Length: 127
Image 1 (cartoon, rainbow, N blue to C red):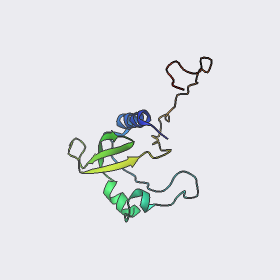
Image 2 (cartoon, one colour):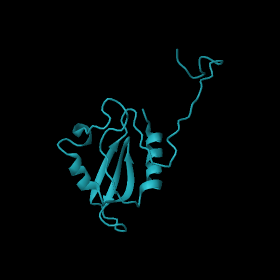
Image 3 (tube, rainbow, N blue to C red):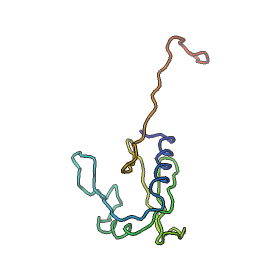
């Protein structure tokens, strides 16, 4: 499960790589290779929204900024390249295993740590 530092790292990567770009292609089907691969899920995307409606709403918009609150990321989208007025927002929730990938960028890395058990229990532990 991504924690807040990973979510912020994702936001910074998105800010660096996609802010200022225009949305030219919209793919809203599962891409994980699992049993739902290639299927559209209107419960996850937006209930009652079709792939065509998603495409019409997003295609041609400019990505103005990438924002975050908790594990929710959103893109502020606009109609004109240099105009900072927001006309639409696209919310992305990282969920339990979520991460966003940017073509040409390295994926998120996680640090590993070990617990030193030679001095156990730790000094400030109540037993």
